[in-house]
Amino acid sequence: SQQGEEDPQALSIQEGENATMNCSYKTSINNLQWYRQNSGRGLVHLILIRSNEREKHSGRLRVTLDTSKKSSSLLITASRAADTASYFCATVGYNNNDMRFGAGTRLTVKP
Amino acid sequence: EAQVTQNPRYLITVTGKKLTVTCSQNMNHEYMSWYRQDPGLGLRQIYYSMNVEVTDKGDVPEGYKVSRKEKRNFPLILESPSPNQTSLYFCASRDRLQETQYFGPGTRLLVL
Image 1 (cartoon, rainbow over the protein chains, first blue to last red):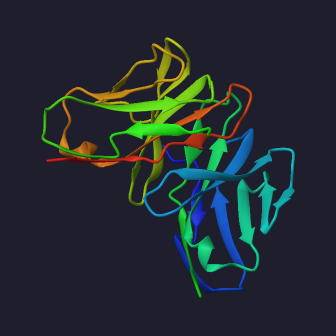
Image 2 (image 1 turned 60 degrees about the vertical axis):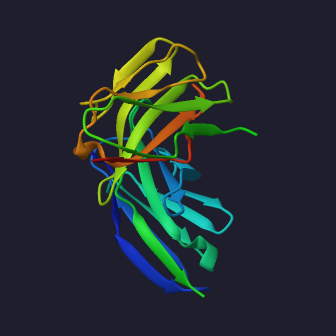
């Protein structure tokens, strides 16, 4: 069963703008991860945030986590055409075996 | 180069003809898993393995089998494929202590 649900399903922006994607989930988590997928290819890990963390940065990526609202957001600043991809959040429970993905947000960055 | 490989990358088959999709990783990872990806549904876990000879069902195991005889390999077996198993399949692996997964390039399967 899906755990995370991304919002919006699709996002189209101009190069240079910021892109924000949201993820909501239902049960307690150990950590939440964001992955990127170029069309039809394997997923690539972007960033992991633990349940006791509120914000994390990696380059142009900023992830926040609100465990009280069971939600996370991924912000990509100063977007580039090469950021065009689908982005998935994945939640990991405390037994660390169950990684559950949402349906993803399809981001298009227009040059 | 550290990687997860899958073969074949593309496969067209007919209903009922047994097939195997291979998965191999060269990172000495204990944990391996299989997912299927369908439009609008994200990735759903089929089976996972925590180590050699240890496998367990994920969320959508019906119609699939797996085996883990060696640490590096985790084949996915469809004994009698049906059209509803048409999908994009991903194998993934991770170290026992790491939490991020490494994904293979995917296998696109069409069952007629």
